[in-house]
Image (cartoon, rainbow, N blue to C red; front, side, top):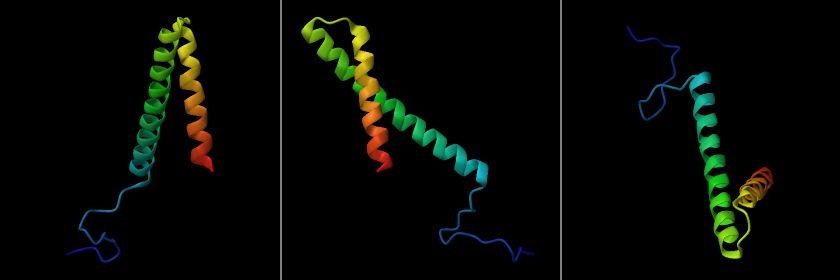
Length: 75
């Protein structure tokens, strides 16, 4: 006998729980932030190699791009 108080979604998939939704959000946001940081660091490394600057400064590029991304996302 089916349970009457259980609500199914229209596509037939069961509704996700709190922890599943929280974990999916954390993974999605973490991957997005890491990709943003890596793109900024890579671009900073290319600029550092072009101008002959130490590669440690390429981390600044990653931090700056990450800061702009987070600020733009919060607008």
